[in-house]
Length: 337
Image 1 (cartoon, rainbow, N blue to C red):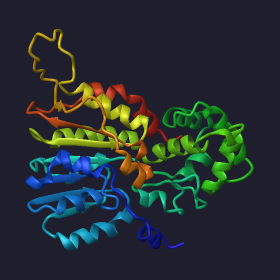
Image 2: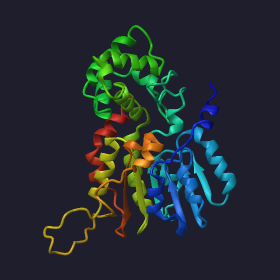
Image 3: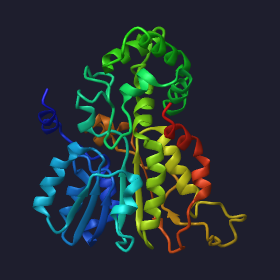
Image 4: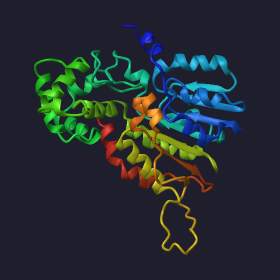
């Protein structure tokens, strides 16, 4: 199958675009950083307004075609970098002072629709799950990783209670035959999950999520991306994150709560005390979600949650407390076998 054709035929729907534009107000101009370029939905929408500039990045090399289209159309207002979140500070000048930094996490429609990369349990292609700039693939993980470590990955990163049972099935299968395709892996997982047909979601969903997160070090990248973005933003700069599963949202929510003015006052009759450990003004404690119309038009948006906060003028400090809280993700994603 021709991958380029697959990408060209896939319609890209930027999730919660109207809400994002309402928050960042590109009509007033400014510089914006799109950390998950994908099909370019956010970047295109921002660049429609004059006096805007967009610095975009994406680790997936197949997004370059979409980026090239914008480079031709807006040569002085758009730049693209094939990079990960953790290298954001190496490509963005610390004096840039962006108006907003935007993250749209998880898989793009382009990646899910590419059967040759094995992101979906519905695909019949090779089991890769690489977003780009990877140390290893899903093929390496399911065929070589220690059984107990694999079980921990599935249980923690996939929030799958049957992680040990599934890991045992995978380990037993690979002693006889190499696991090469997503279809094979799905079959093994379904075999491990008794009465799998009774589940509302495909029982392979959580295991695929876990392996994909591990292969791409997604949680580590998110944590580092949040920290670096905070350092790059100046007073009144906005940090926006759209997440799609509970692990991502837990990290984002915790980050904003730890380093914002969300802490309760000892008394409602006292004025809110300023705290030097606050780095953000929290717009709302509750996440925004897509409306019914968007979910109807793009079913993949149904699990999206949008959180955002506004940078204050307190000097940046490295948020050790936050990083320490999620140290287990760093440890898990950093060990190969």
